[in-house]
Length: 314
Image (cartoon, rainbow, N blue to C red; front, top):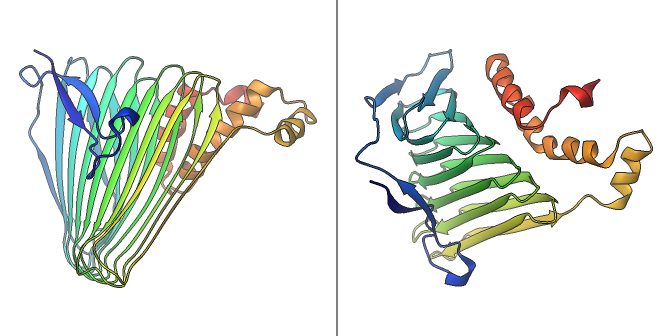
């Protein structure tokens, strides 16, 4: 039996008419297929990247759980690919010990009419750094809910998000960063494109807790609007219970200007192709920075299913 579940909640509610305080989804807990939780310990000296995958297959509702712990001094990369054909929910937990450094590269991909919900929780110890790259591609509805706890002094978060919304797709991204330790740092950067009648909500919360003196946080989003019926909601939020901190936020929202269109047209590129090239730009930037041939191919394949690149490369 399906029930309505509220996810991607803001820590502090805003005006209800904006419909951004949370996101409702329909989920059937009783009939959810749930394989065994995957546990992994990352130790210093391990050179090969960890590769995770979640695929609900033909199950109407499926769930996968990962729990990852990085031991003191570990430094490495985790690649995670989640693909939903129907309805898939993924829980991923990272615990970073002192002086560890983890980079998570995350590809969230959906089939047409599918639902994908990804929940990420991260806890960083002293001098620990978590890097997060998230790419949302596909034809279905995608929700990403991220909570990062900067518990240790001088711990940090660097996150980049790229997305493309097409047709009537819904993309809902939520990230909350809690600064507990002193001299902690967070940097959130998001960019993407919305086409046709796609809808996107981006919530970014930076919360400076009491005792987080000397901490710095920033968030910025760039959105390219490529359809008359697209809907964009950008919700930056900075909370502060400490005096000696610095928090900034910004958003740039716009369309293709006439000068850019003229540039493309002067080179024989029509408007539709120009929009596809620009829509792909943020995603391609993140793919090029993955530095892993296997995952780059996987990501380009997902991108080509969404926007055909072959015609534009000829």
